[in-house]
Length: 102
Ligand code: TYC
Image 1: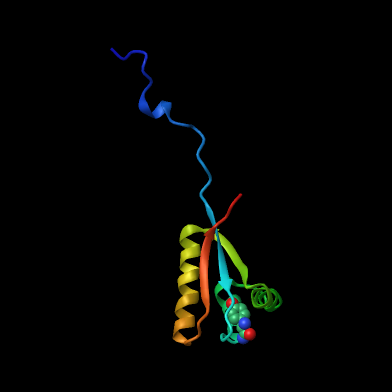
Image 2 (image 1 turned 90 degrees about the vertical axis):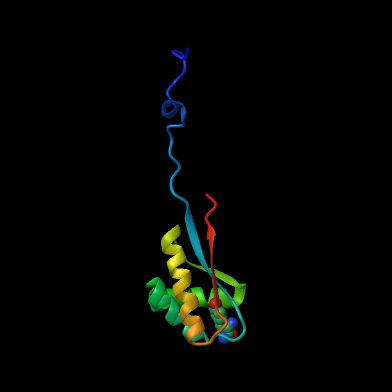
């Protein structure tokens, strides 16, 4: 029996999917000060002052904006860092991660 059967490992697909990437997204609110958001973007996402201002203004006018795109663990760490700073400062700033569609 079984000489025609392939070993299980050889039957599996050979092509490995690349690991998923996640956008870290800031959400707008009416209370968090603009300069606090700019500082978060500079410190946690290493954006220049100019890029931080642009992302903050995009969130302010459009409701949300991408701060950066990372593998799952790094994205989750960034989200936690933002939420922790916002809580410490008692601002209602929210940050989420979403898997990139590509
Ligand atoms: N809308 C806020 C204000 O007018 C500024 C703001 C920008 C808040 C971006 C959150 O993710 C945010 N003070």
